[in-house]
Image (cartoon, rainbow, N blue to C red; front, side, top):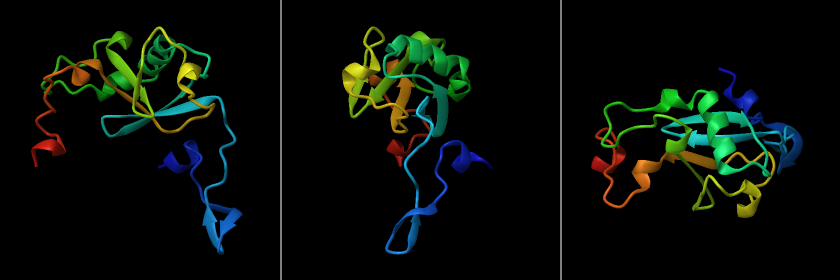
Length: 131
């Protein structure tokens, strides 16, 4: 119900485009947003954090609920099973987000089960891939 408010996506006339309200620049730079299995997660994290720190914050923030027990992969059993992606690049758990130019307050990150990125991994049975 409050997704637009939480993710700062309420259009205003602060920066209109040809008289149309637009989404203003984000104000809260302390939170990053991740897409995972069709859901968005918002966690407090910073570009100087390592991938491991962010994965742990996501796990504590409830990403374990995105786990699909009926998938073709083992599922996420802990933060070590989460892969983070920004601009098409997988961020290793040992590297900092700033090494990949992740800006403060970024809202376009992906969190995915690491096993799904392995060679030969198949999409889940309910994936649009099979349509």
